[in-house]
Image (cartoon, rainbow, N blue to C red; front, side, top):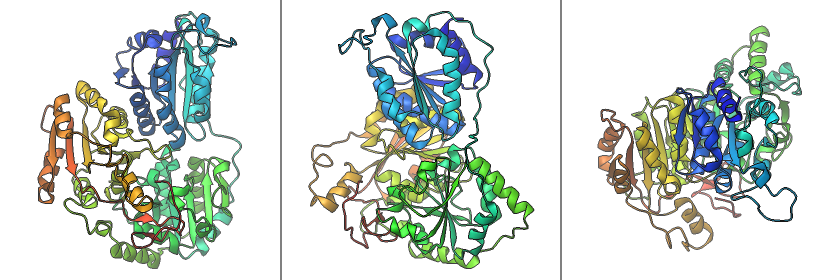
Length: 575
């Protein structure tokens, strides 16, 4: 069997029906082999970074590895940002790069390059992958692909890279029947003392759950919802966890962190017990003042032991896979006579905080369309869409603060990498993974990084609807410059411009409208969500006050509960 035919057959056996690529000479054998399968769609992107972001989202949505191919040299290096995104946000993915023939590789020669476009992508990718394979013999292919898929899925999911020279792709090998690869549970997790753990919960007056991206990444979302129903604990979501419960769920509090809902951060401040589930407790969630957290009782459940008692100390450590943890917790509750506490006074206190500090009142001085109000308006009318895919910037925070995520919807964004340009190609991946409508929320800066993928949407007539929040500058950095650089706007206003995105979209063949006035919001939303046209892709350009900030924002150096503009920072932070 030809190696490239085996790779195609292996992907097909794994139930993966979409792969992403940008063609190049060193992957032509593999693309040709995959094209023989009518039920695998080869999606040709216009940049390898876009292919990597699409694979990231495909992995998040399906739970199976997203697949992206790239040729040697610049094709392979262009994947690196998306590989890092998968690594930091726990997305299962396989990145397959073509490499020059073995006889064209420099090996140990003291030269920079022998073959054209020869590049050591394995060494570059190793720090941001769970594993990176350099294939040197065709006999490695079978074992490497089985290992790679298992590694990508098991433990904390993530990316694996396989670099395959072109002469090996066309080699003949003898293989065993291909098996379907599944997640393998680690045997080295701790045994959980559920009696001790639930005693901590039972004695707390104001317990609260911090839900992270690990809940979705582990495949434990359904069990998590059962756990919340059984315990009646309030739930706050990190940026990666805002979609673990619908916004109208009585247990969902809001979005936590540097730009979190003010009432949510204040609820964390009042809580006496924090149950952290699949969250890293990084600086965007806690602020710089970790002592504020360390003074609370914290139960931290994570599949990676290094994440527990890392930044925030004195946590009750539970090193376990969330799927197994929830199974054990639900079994304990059903067999131990556990009784649900209503926590009625605690829920009422949280509700009062939310009523006092609504997200729609955080920007009282801006002119024109209030972005938080707009997010509520668009999302309450878009209950049928599958996912909201947010790019990186102020619009990302407005979306996380105010999008009314419904029970079956996803909220997808670039968390750890924080990559501008993520949303448009990621939405393509999410749309193809779900076969449903996906909405992009991007800024005028971020959308330009991968704007070429509008052509991919048009060519495949994908139901991807795009909102561009256009404030004519790089708003999050401009806000940072207001705080720390006396409003010197180098490269945010000064030296920066954006086109008319309505005209750009029309040039690509999408439908497009520009929204400028608050009184026209309802009409624009109705147009945007209407699905009667044969052209599925739409773009809505929403003009926003150039000085609209992402508020509230942690007053850096102070506890999580002290937020701008009411409180002033005492230290400089990252944006």
